[in-house]
Amino acid sequence: MNSVLQPWFRPEQPGWRQLLLFKAGWLGLVLQPMHSATLVLFLLIWWLWQLKPAQRLTVFTLWGSGLLLDTLLLAGGVFQFDSVWLPFWLVLLWGWFSLFWSLVFSPFLQRPLAVALFGLLGGPLAYWGGAQLSNSLQIMTEAWFWLIMAPAWAALLLWARHAELWWWQRLKGGLDAQI
Image (cartoon, rainbow, N blue to C red; front, top):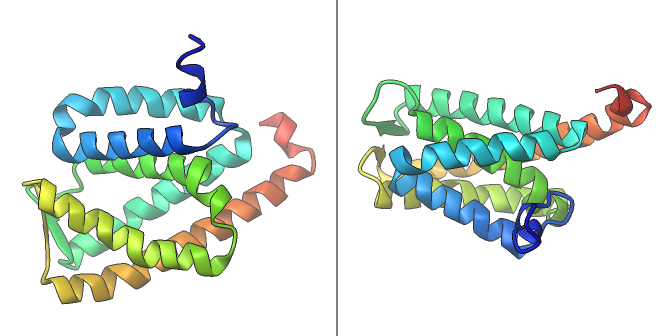
């Protein structure tokens, strides 16, 4: 890999570059999903290939849990899209967020209170911002939206932290080398 690009794409050294890549992917998927989906999918697959098994399983656990949460919230009317099901760009965005949760956010949010606060604020803000920038996402009345999304996201990220620790402990006993 080119030495100029290497610091941007190394999963073992997360930092501000990866945070910028996360935000660029988020903005691309929200603003121009048709144009950015291929690049995000390619980078997501490449990064998944680079991760350790416990990190990869953490990403897939959060990705699936997030899609389940969004499906329930969509069915409950908390938000809606211009399609009946979750759009492909949102499915990719969950993978993108899950990857960067494992690479960037989780290593810096070590305490459960920090994880919960990140979920309480970050999750609803991401959807609120997405609704402001995108024509395909509409959210319910803002007060109800925040009252539902904030605890749901706090619980989701606390669950992700628990699952991450479980995967690391589970694979620590030699199973890591087999996967």
